Structure formats: structure tokens, C-alpha cells
Image (cartoon, rainbow, N blue to C red):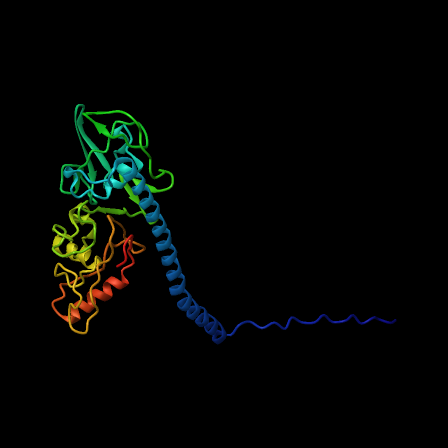
Length: 319
């Protein structure tokens, strides 16, 4: 009897990774991640800043439209010290007629949240200017009338104690911008700050601080000062003011722009000439440089200069 011999199948000769090879692959991946992560983050930050800059340009156009209608840029009420940022939401988008629509459901309250206290006709309207767990009246709230008597977006000019005539705006479309109460937010969710200059002195020249004469600008830092407090110096109003001045060109915080602040040190340059400042905290969510010290020496001045250059804030002026 004859038997046929069947062909043997080939054996799988694949080999598993050795421990050394696996470690090499992991090491390569770690190196690639280390190389690519900074580049990706840099691209993300650049894209974020570009988007915010575009938003500031849109707001600038809206401010010019407002000026065309009313003859001047929006200005915070004298009773609204500390709420300059809320002017953008109030005048460019426009409040709603029902104050209750602005009441946030629960604490904590965030900048831009609005509350009305009392009953008609004795109603006081407040806007939150700093994170707080309690409602008004506190230092974290400013009296700031946001109800213009018009039911819906837009703004009506108050004439002789009553509202009448044309509804202006909204100059910014509510569905195109993030908002919180009266705060217009950037793409990250932080309020965009607004500093209108004195009508007579609208150039940025920090000589004499924010109250001055002649060619000195009159940007009232108090309109938005709370946003420049850092965690380490929450109560240090002076340090917050230093950061604003430094961003405007006064690196040594001596109250003026010096062509030769120190021998062999970069000169100070006023940031720009604009009738108002628009200011976003940028990708890091922090307004102004991380730290600013009084430039009592060349070393201090150079540290301040470097801090300003590294600051990722987005503004309508060049720092």
C-alpha cells in the first residue's frame, strides 16, 4: 500500500520585541514628544493671540460706529469706578430691559455679573468687578446702571429723564462674542478691558501717571485696576499700577518715558497714540507682566524690560 506524504506547513518565525528594543522605542517617542510639544503649544498660543487680536479689531470698529452715532466714545459713569470693562457690554451690545435677566443663579460671582437691588422706582444696579462669593454692596461691586429701558439688544440714549427715539446698535452681535453679564469676553473667557482716554489728552504718555496735563494722557487705571492684581499681591494697588505703566512704556515706573533711563540700557518708548485701550490677558489669562519692580538699578530695569517682552497680553497698542 502506498501512502502520500503531505507537505509540511511553514512555521511562523516572527519574533517578539526584546526589552531593550522596547525601551529604545519608548525613548524615541519621549524625545519626539519633548521636541514637538513646545512647537505645538507655541502654535496654539499664536493662533489664540491672532484670534483675540481680530476680536479687538472688531470691537475697535464697533467703537468707531458708536462714536459716529453719539459723538464720543463710551465712557464709564462717574458712579461706575472700577467697571470700565463693563462699558463694552453696556454700550456696544446693549443691556436687556429686564434686570432680572442679568442675575446669576448662584455664587460665586464673576466679573461682568450684574445684580439689581431694591424695587421700582428705587432700584440700584451693580456690576461685579472682581471674583466674589457675596453680592453687593462690597468693594467688588460697582454701581453701574445697565438697564436703558429697551427690551432687547441695543442702546437708547436717555433724554430728559426718559428713554425715547431711535434704538442704536447693537454694535457687536451678541452671538458673535462670548459675554458674561456686561463683560465682553475674549476667546479664552476672560473680560476684555477698556480704558477710554481723556478727550483732550488721548496720547499714551505716562508722564505724571494717569492724571496729568498738557500732553499727558488721562487713562483712569481705576476703571480696571482689579484685573491687574496678582495672587502674590492682591492688595498691592501700587504694584498693579506699576504693571500698567510698564506696559505703556514706563519700564522703570518713575512716571515718565525716558530716552536714556540708565546708561547702556534700552530706551523707553511710549506704546502708542490711541483714544482708548483695549486689553486682553492673552493665552496665560494673566493681565500684564508676571512681576514688575521699581527700576532702581539697571539690573531691575532690564528684568522689567524682559518681563514686558515675554508678556503674552493682546492689546490695541504695541508694548
